[in-house]
Amino acid sequence: MAVIIWHNSRCSKSRNAFNYLKDKDIEFEVNEYLKTPPTIEELKSILLKLNMKPSELIRSKEKTYKELNLKEASEDELLEAMVNNPKLIERPIVINKDKAIVARPLENIEKVLN
Image (tube, rainbow, N blue to C red; front, side, top):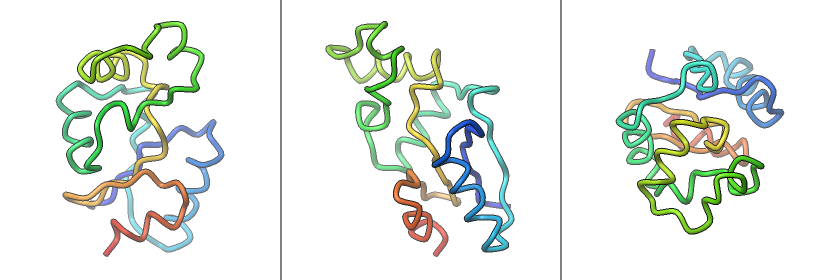
């Protein structure tokens, strides 16, 4: 199985992506990243697949982002903040082998399935 979804069941966008994959009969693995946060190496690997920097993947409107005063943080500091506070990671992320996408809008999922 190659398709993985980084999933937060409390997020409607994440639930929509989960259901999208189910409805398409795609076999996939669920990574509940809030329960099992990624390591820095895992997050760096995902960022490479996404072709994004930490500043592009962080949820800057989250209360934790403001509490940690991350507005002036470096990319390395943002990376560490996301590992220590996984709710800061944008979701959902769908990964297929060497490709990944933030599934917003939902149709983005098709970009990694081909």
